Amino acid sequence: MKSIGSPRRAALALALLFSLALLLQFPFSAAAQASAKPVYNPDRPEILHDKNLYAESAVLMEQHSGRVLYDMKGSQKMQPASITKVMTLLLALENAELDDIVVVGSEINQIPGDSSRCGLIQGERLTLESLLYGLMLKSGNDAAMTIAVHVAGSVDAFVAMMNAKAKELGCPNTRFANPHGYENQNAYTTALDLSPTTI
Image (cartoon, rainbow, N blue to C red; front, top):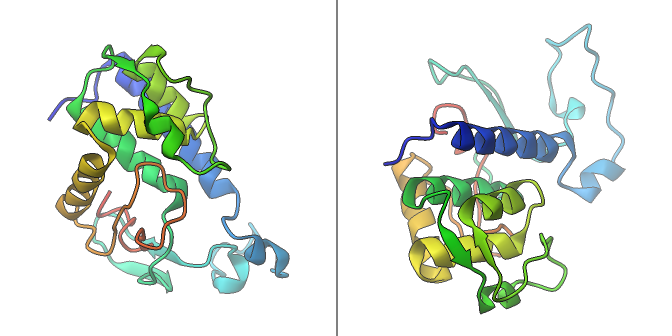
């Protein structure tokens, strides 16, 4: 396993954290946005219940002991959406080099038309590092596909790696169906699988 300790890898880790912060800042569900929810009161942080949350499921866990302090549908299977890209980033960092030159192939034509993209053009050559920034900062589904092919030789082989890694990390209720997270009925995860003791 490769170290993620170099300055360039650290910069990518910061990009990942920034992307996750954006993902967590905004509700995933339009229905949840539409429903009236009480405003969270920072003066009373101990009042935590589902009426304070826009999320459809949530878990609050004490990191070191693993004790669950709050669980709202924590075992319910949910679409992983762009959290999928975190796994794609992890596998790329573990199995390839940032300086690798990657040729964009026809795999970018296999994503749905309304996918988020970073604007890759078939035949262009980029470093893996550039593709990872396109993956995490632009949420590029095209970048995810190109990274998958570069790392594993095919998208299907990469998805198999993703699912094996999820099991290795102790996420039994997580399954990936593509490297980018576009909605797929065969892809799911749970709030418990994404808890601090498993990531």
